[in-house]
Picture (cartoon, rainbow, N blue to C red):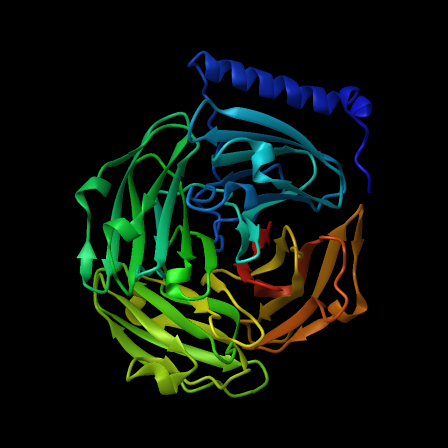
Length: 488
């Protein structure tokens, strides 16, 4: 659907309201009286640890942004309106250098709008408010050897966790902490590493000024560590945190892996879909953030088999982080490893006994895989849902987009996938009435093969009972993986 002409936009009462709102906010900021303070989601809402939930009413999105080390020109932000009415969107750029700026956009019903990050202002965090419609927001990077896209957050939190991090030679680990509110925040950063737990003095009572972000080079704080898990605990206020891992040419094939953190620890984590690609290296990172040693069971289940694969049991000491290799066990050198044959698609259930709190996250390197290259990371999920959404499905050089659906229940679930684009919702027959057996995952190909669509579509998934959903996008020079947005 074509967007209305600018002359029509000027005559729209809603659009005039949005312009007026932007002007008022900008004026208050310039005068030092700004009180912009979006309300986070209620604390009693049970959400997936991606911290992205699309509420029935208008939703505020928080995008922490990429670290300055990555090319700003390659950054992208996608606004997808999966509702049946037009959405007016106000984007506030909390620029690292300079004052906050505002951009107003209109996103037609059932349509996808992707903007280069440069079109929205200078490097910094974004706060996105939508009026009307139902807007899903993703941010990421799109380049020949740097590709990833993940949902922004819809709530702030006093706690954020990242289990999978690493800082060997040639690898950069960046932490971005965003404070979009009118009051200053203060946080403590804890690093659980290969050499023990560290609380760097410079990152204790660490000030995050109002309406700003801080970018921390973890690789300069925790140097040459095989395993680095990060925890952020706010003393004052609440924040949003994201992590970007950058593999430079010094570490082999370049790659970028972006993720928003998990705002909660849990005793049970689920990963809807993975694949043991030949030549790849995949690990499951488990950080023990609880008050006791954790006895952890890692159970993988192959999509094509009724019986689960052999489980792995390990003890993760308090304040420790352990890595479990996924597949390629011959090369594991005695380390904990889940025996998964090449080419097998699988799901994971990671469970801590006695309810000891852990955080789980995967990290995959397709350095030598024959058909795919790049880096993918994904936090586990805690709560299943009947509705999920992804803001986009296509990138430049795309070869394949898939969805992995995992059913944690005792009965079969029937799911359907809709493609939202150009003013309509398309429901291909091959993506409808997908049966997901109990305790199993099913991967469906949304796009793939010799012919890929020219359009970018938002993906909406509806299921008869709660499930977990993850998306994978494979391009010619990189790959991207992401958990979905829960649709409330």
